Image 1 (cartoon, one colour):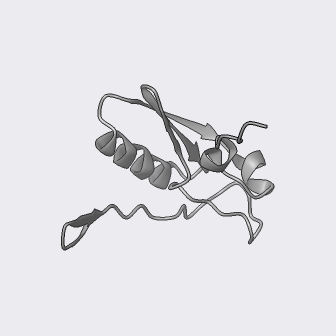
Image 2: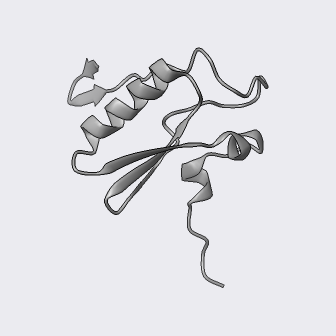
Length: 91
């Protein structure tokens, strides 16, 4: 963990291996959704970094279930779980 004045930054490495090889595919563990009692996050198929990300989220969200899902299809069209769960304004 990096420390700056009054700020702690958790560094989660990008996956070394990922199922989607497209250069423009963004494999970011930071694009997650915290909801009631859980955190929904992506997994990219790299066992080591998927585990690092899962453990970091568990540490920062104690008491919540950490649910990781294959988000490859969503990522291939340019989004992530946090992007896809944003609210729409009422009409």
